[in-house]
Amino acid sequence: MAGMQDFWCFEDDFFGGGTLSTAGQGDPWVVTTTGSGTAAYVDGSASGEVTIDNESTGEVQNTCLSFGDKLAMDIDKIQGAEFRIKMNQAALDATTSLAFGLTGDRNDAIDSVAQAALFRVIGGDSTTAVVVESDDGTNDNNDVATGQTLINAYKLFKIDFSQGTSDVRFYMDDANGLRRVAAGTTFDMSNYTGSLQPFVQLQKTSDTNTDGVTIDYVKVWGKR
Image 1 (tube, rainbow, N blue to C red):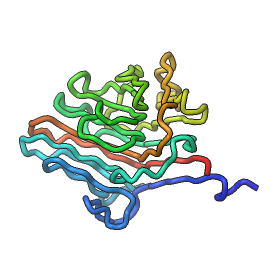
Image 2: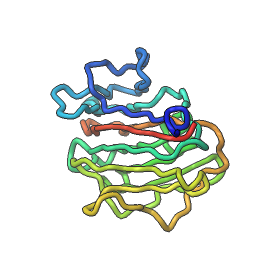
Image 3: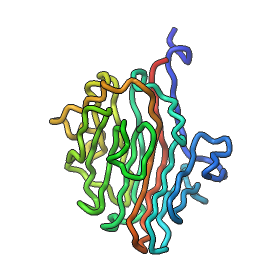
Image 4: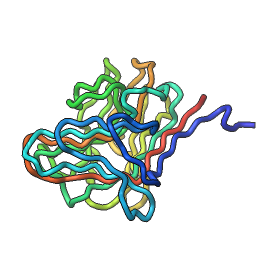
């Protein structure tokens, strides 16, 4: 009988009053920061949420929620990942960018992350348009258009590894539910055989905006 001995699942609905910190404090999540940005559980949330926010100081800020580069999920075993997420404003400021998905070791510069399967909103290009990308250290697909947007309303995002690492697929909510996006591009990550971590990173260049993003839940699952 299939069960926990055959499959694993990481889920975080962000219930509770814990403190997210650079030390991790026993939680799987670690906050990595440059500047004064913040990451915190939402007080009064109806369903458990974490918010990541820029702070108004006119400086470069980068706030990342990840496993602190403790890569715990074998890419060859992962079957899928889901993120339910929204912006805290109708559009990002032009100096702010958002990235989330699964990565190897993090980097302030998203395009310098060596292994990644990511959704992105890049403020300098568009303040609401979602693009996707993958990188395995050899094959690199950057900023592939999805035709969809992210605003201050929740959307569900899925990264599907069930077809194998040579054909990673991306899905997003629209009016009809989850649908595949960027289907005309093959996202091949087969040259990487290590492990990944969940990752959400909000960053801005030197600017005073207080843009933010709220995460409802993160789920990653796979085979043992």
